[in-house]
Amino acid sequence: MKSVYGFVIEPKGERYNNSKKVGDREAIVKAVPILSETDIKVGDTVIVHHNVFRRWYNQYAEEKNSASFFNEKTYIVYPDQIYAYKRNNYWKPLKGYLFLQPLEETNELYNEKEQLRGVVVYSDGTIEKNSLVQFKARSKFEFVIDGQRLYRVRSNSIT
Image 1 (cartoon, rainbow, N blue to C red):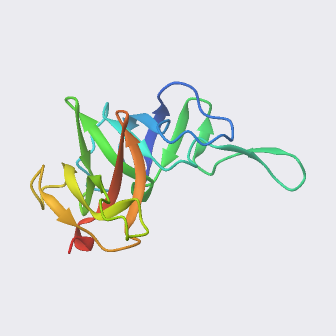
Image 2 (cartoon, helix red, strand yellow; image 1 turned 135 degrees about the horizontal axis):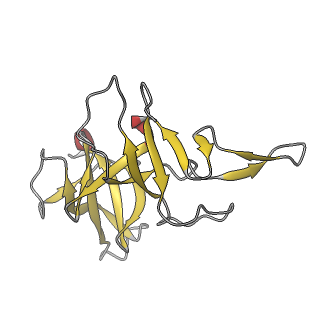
């Protein structure tokens, strides 16, 4: 099975049931889009949007699946629903993004627990791994990758 614009994926493990589990968003790529250039290949593990595998109830108490649902083991997702892919035991963010390890705030007068700085853990190639970078406020999204809490930040949000 192939899709013109979407990736055909299969969830790793069971899909979740309306409880937020930040680390349970991994899937295996079964087919890549026909009309899209991508670095992602069949067999890669991907991290997808948390609503891809979601099952929910509408206002009539009818159980529904996400728009990505094809069948219990098959989902079709678009490139903007994929955040990173893993090949040869190494995670790689999609082009234009970095994953950072946030730094704790040490100044007690500052209201935040973490600084707007972090160390690059996974890079798209624009900034070297292990670089200390600062990023714009409200530009981070939290992920748990291999048990490590990281922020996903756009490369152009690095200041």
